Image 1: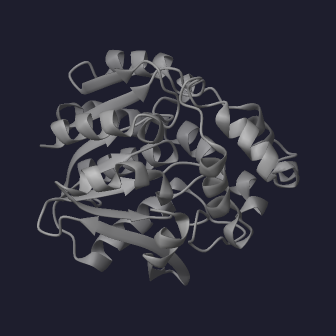
Image 2: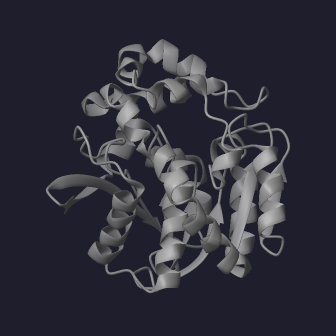
Image 3: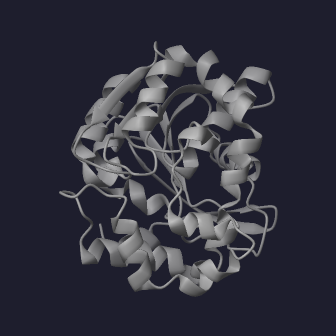
Length: 285
């Protein structure tokens, strides 16, 4: 599938006056699987595993506020709001019981969904959750130089530095040395980042780093309480949340599923799509 086909297949719904782009697919009669993307990309990240996962699941994915083809307001990017959007999307589609596969930025959304289920404030129908590389444990999150700039008082400079060339160089650094993105892949990622001037707000989307620190206890406790129904598929060579984060997972939730992919980095669903899909489907079965 190319980016034009992906754009053409997008649907939209209104969330608090904002248009949210979403996609559905796969087996309409199978158990729903909610896919939650990462930063700074969008639901396009799931295309490499879309067909394989869709053979066994009804797939649902959106571009969160500020990402991809969804609206990109000047502010309002708390993880709690992004979690509200997932809830609204499920309600919009009339979804009951479902599982989730979450990555990067999306792992915090996944943790908040679990926390709400546990405190009775939402997501009562959430089943299993499979996590991919992301900042599950704030003290294990090794922010990249551009992220550090983005959350500083000079964060606005990140927007000025956000060019296709600069993005390609920095983004490639979080992939494994043998699974580097091609020029065409980088062009596709950039197309959605830059859509509707999204390249002007990367520092605003970094709100999640502070959210993770603020809600650390709540979100880590959610993992412990959900230990029997969660799993982590981790790219070991990720400089942000690689094997060091996987090792912490093994310590915090020793009874949870875990799978380490030794030769890939931060985007395992892009770098090793067949392996990610196989393991995820096995755990979700």
